[in-house]
Amino acid sequence: MVTIRALEERILKEGLVLPGEVLKVGSFLNQQIDTKLLMDMGKETARLFEGAGVTKVLTLEASGIALAVAAGMAMGVPAVFAKKHASINMSDKVYTSSVYSYTHQKTYEIVVSADYVTADDTVLIVDDFLAKGSALTGLIDIVNKAGAKLAGCAIAIEKGFQGGGDKLREQGIRVESLAIIDSMSDDSLTFREQ
Image 1: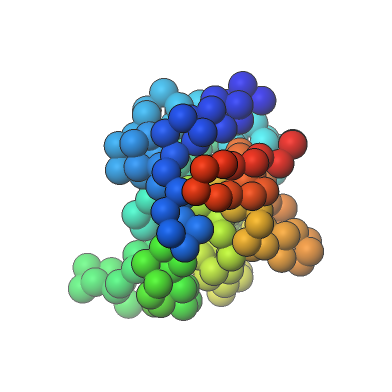
Image 2 (image 1 turned 90 degrees about the vertical axis):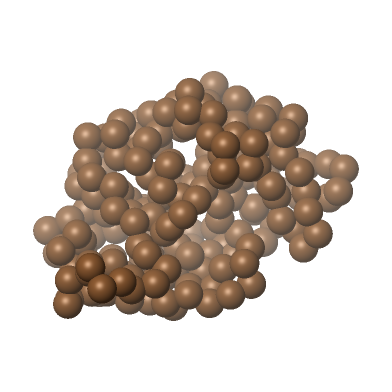
């Protein structure tokens, strides 16, 4: 719980609410990273999913990579990230899914090499934000296409008022968020008690 409180305090101190219900946390999580806080978040994610049999951590480039690596390190498993565009150095067999980025207002065709997520894996999806759930839905689609088992989703900051987490939980998907914002305005944030 110390990690959760520390994250909430940083959001209150340094987070900036932008138009369109966007929360900017670039000073400690997205562009400049507080590595101690990040590693603590990775350890807390590992604690939450201890015993779930996780063999891979999966995220979407780019902002989720740091937290996915921290969680993977704490769990002792590889971190894999979906690319937003296919490249010539990828294998011929890939899994793809369409994802709408709330922040960028754009749809991406995300791609993961079939070499990195297989039917033998139990996958934990990790991301920095959860708003409406499009990124997680796309990553879950990739896990399903690979025939892998989904352990759940671990999120740094969930914007609970946008409903994505609730929709996933209603589908029986385990979603653990380190901080859940219930309401957000230009001058205030309210966190959900956990």
